[in-house]
Amino acid sequence: MSLLEAATKVRENAYAPYSRFKVGAALRAASGAVYTGVNVENVAYPEGTCAEAGAIAAMCAAGERQIAEIVVIADSPEPVPCCGGCRQKIAEFAAPEVRVTMATLDGKTRSVTVAELLPGVFRAAHMDRA
Ligand code: THU
Image (cartoon, rainbow, N blue to C red; front, top):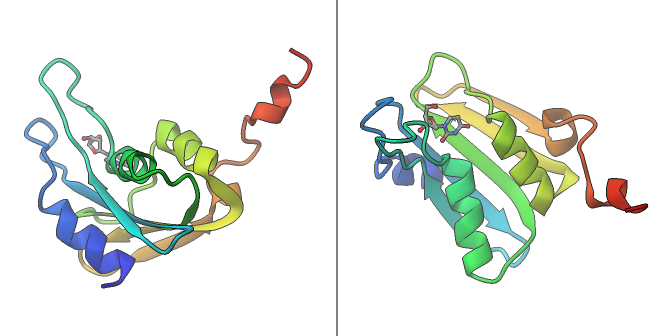
């Protein structure tokens, strides 16, 4: 199953009763294993946690730390850009050249690198003098 297929399939399990906007994410880690995630909302913080964060959490829980590729999908008119927080979370675990593909249910895709997704990223090296 491709990452796009995995993200599309897992999206059905999103818990988004407040926004009604279901998002699915699938990433391939360095080992080749695929980890998936969905957005999970709650009444106190309706934005909840993003699908990308869910997939990253699943990867970390399995003991992996390196994203090789990630796909995000939602039913939107245009591929939905990852939110700011997710850009930083993806950059934590992915090299600058790693592909991030955003997709719509009707087949539109937009593919960028992590460097394009988050230019000027804050990295641990910026704290080297601390
Ligand atoms: N959302 C994601 O899961 N990923 C994104 O990249 C954009 C937004 C979710 C969070 C919230 O549950 C809903 O979409 C509306 O913001």
